[in-house]
Every structure is written in structure tokens, then in C-alpha cells.
Image 1 (cartoon, rainbow, N blue to C red):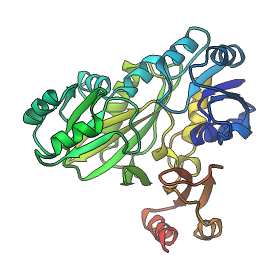
Image 2: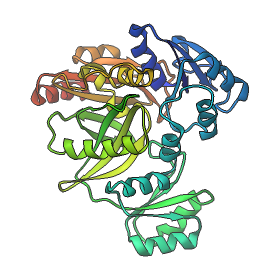
Image 3: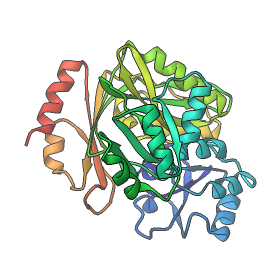
Image 4: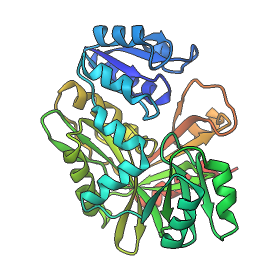
Length: 356
């Protein structure tokens, strides 16, 4: 089976690595000649909306997926008219726009922070008067890893935030007083079967995920699964999806969804019976889903901007995944997975890995 992937970054690379044991072949569409997934298949070099390349991708691939949501929805809609595409274009369009995303979540009875659409400075001022401060102003589309947003803490911040982000559709979100950030990775097959990975507790630095720790038997697992299940069904979703959440007391508040494999699920490569990457391929190919059960306890540490010392990582008992990307500030270049039989042993290994 030949899998077409729109995008050829590290997520596409890990999907392809998971597909090789299943004798899958890969065809990537990406505008970068040095895309890190390129060695694992054939690269169609060009823009994501190149009509000739989209036509070729649709003709040669048995099924198409995408590795991130910042691809043109029109490209996915075109592909959908010519070959099987999972997740579907509606899922992409919903996840790309924070206003559409949060509106759907609320319609499904899933709790979010209060929010308001903002298209002018006057609308921003009105939204602040309704939601209060602090609040977070975000671009509705194309924001990731902390980009495209500004925190408003006092009235003087309003005009500065508008000057920074104004000119594109925005959304103002009320501030959530949370105790921790978590995410759930879910997968849904073509036949509607759903499976869920254990919650991961996430720590961010400068808006970028730093550390994810799997939480088997977390007391909020059922609530997270119920949220994800509603979302998967409403979108007729196929493939892996991530739902990022805040915990406030005993309630989970949905932050955003990602219609793809997700950074906070990287621990599953060594830490689960079936990785998120293999399960994504199983789902979109119409194969039986694999077990999402954890193998003990696991954590994932991101390396941002600088490549790790391979010797140090391996000596700490971790598994290293380098992405074949040149380092630069703010760029994800590798991750390490740490596994252990219990939470205490995991913490000891993490402490060793994090030591200078």
C-alpha cells in the first residue's frame, strides 16, 4: 500500500518509520528540498497547493493523510474528491480555526474557556469588558508552539496586543486558572472503532512542549475519553487525534484539538503496545487498530534548538529519536523517550536525563 502524506517533517518521518514493518510505501508533498522525511519515500517537491503535484499525489497514493494542520484546506478538499483522505477536510477546517473549533466543542457539551471573535480594536475592547482580564488574544488560524498570541494582563496591554496581532481574524479567550496541562491521544478506525491512550501530563517552555509524562490510571481518564469520543464521532473522524486540556479542580477544560499524530504522544513509540504512528496508519488503511495500553510508565523529552548529546541520552537509559534537521532556535530537532516499570523509577531516569 502506498501512503501519501502532505508534509514531510518529523511527524511524517515517524509515520513512515512505523509503516516500514508493514511494507507500506510513502509519497510526500513538501516545499522543502531537505525535508527530513524525504529519505523514507518519494518527495514531490513543491507547494501544498500545486495542482499538478496534488493530481499526481491523488493518482499514485492509495490513501492520503497530512502531518499538520497548516496546509491549505482547499488542497485537502481537492484530494478528497479524487482519493481516500483521512482525516477528512471538515476535521482540518475545524481544527485550523480556533473559533470554529471552540464553537463545535461547546455544541458537543465539552467545556472550554469563554471566548469571543475579534475583528477590530473596538471588538477587542468589548470582548475584554465581557471576559475580563487576564485573557489571551490569538490568531484564529496558523498559530502553533506559542506563536500568534499575546497575553493581556492589564488594560494597557489591549492596544499593544492589537498592534501586534491585528489585521487577521482573532479570538479572545478567557484565562483558565489550571493546575496542570494534559492531553489525550485518540484513534478512530474506518469502521468507527475508537481507542484511547493514557492521559499525558505536559510541561511547556516558551510556548513549546518540553516534557510529556504518561499517566496510566489517571482519575480523569474517563472524562478525557468522553470528550474525545464525542469529537471523533461528530467529525466522522478517521486516524489519530490529540485533544489538549487544562485541569481545573476535577474538571477538564478543552484547549484545542490537533487532527494528526501529536508531540505529546511520542512516548507511545516505546511506551505503548502500539505507537500513535502505527495506529494512525492502521486506521487510515482500514486495518485493525492496535492496543493503546501503556507498557508501564513513560515520558517524552523534547530537544529544541540544539541537538542532544547522543552518548548522554543513551547512558541515561533513554531512547533517542533524532529528526535529521539542522538545529536553529525554537526548532524541534529530536526527542528522547524514557520508560520504566513504575512512576518512581521513571522519575529517577528522568532526573538523570535532565541533569547537566
